[in-house]
Image (cartoon, rainbow, N blue to C red; front, top):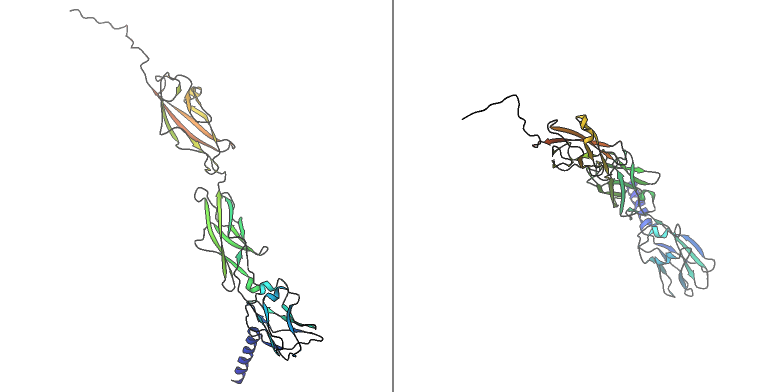
Amino acid sequence: MALFSVLIILVCLQVDSVRSAIVSTEVNCVSGSNVALARVEEGFDGDIEIITNISPDVRLVLEYHVCLLCLQYLELVYTDGDSTATVRPIRPLDLEEIRQYGEALSYSVSCVGGAKNVRSLYVLDINDNPPIFQTSSYTGTVSDGTPVGWVCNRVKAFDKDVNLENKRVTYSMLPPVPEHFGLRYNPQHDAADIELIKPVNYNNVKKYVFMVEAKDIGGLSGTTTVTLTIEDFDNLNPYFDHCLYKASIEENQVGLFSDITPEPIKAQDGDTGINEPVVYSITSVIPNEYQNSFEIDRNTGVISVTAALDREQTGQIAVVIQATQQNDASKTADAVVLVTIVDVTDNPPKIDQGVHSSHLA
């Protein structure tokens, strides 16, 4: 029981040394002094030191030592002739700001016309700063031909706390998490890489928007928004709106078809986000002897009949057409146009000269 009581006393003393920095000191106006005060946590707002046994003929002032900024934190509570004086904060101590000027909060209680009495107050870091991302939003582009494992973007957050444990940050993606992307910590850059873990498809989703959170050991956190725009990759062939078209033209006529169904011939790039132009051509005609009876406009796909067709010789002709991506001849699509020859009266009736009949009334 006695040992337990001693431990409690020691713990209380340790807490008091951190949070209650009251130290009794004296000034030496002849040779000065240099005192390291007790350590306090940042945010401390209690008395720092009490100066005692001040001679009536001594006048004290608070001056900066090394750190000019430090005087913005402190005040000297003292009136000429007092035998005691107190140094205390006038605003909470911020270690991250103090560290810009030195390891400690340094000041001097100086005797007017005499020596300086230097004080050093060491401030301990507490986890009071949340991680903050370099920017509130990140943007990037990803091609739908990008391989899995590719780093699409990199996000980084900073924690202003001084202590390494307090400033250590972990990253995560907040729900709803897109199934195509994941996070991987990058120790070289102390950041999080956004990695492609599943192929994306421009034709399915054109943009992903999600949030990434950075959190420190104390649970303080910050977020940023990531927007990844999907770009189409030139990996698809052109396609016709229909694989079979039907057209008709009267026999002995040349020029355009009188009608074509289900709609005019049209092909386009399968990569709709790129939409490279296509050119048209006739690859074959069945029967083959009509190969030179048709031509197609390479830019519009409009087919013309260039030689008169005879219904009595054939009733239908199949014209096989092809659309080719203009900048890549290996990307093609095929369709068939089934042409019907419409019969017209172009042959007069013939009389068989071998048969004669007459009727006399």
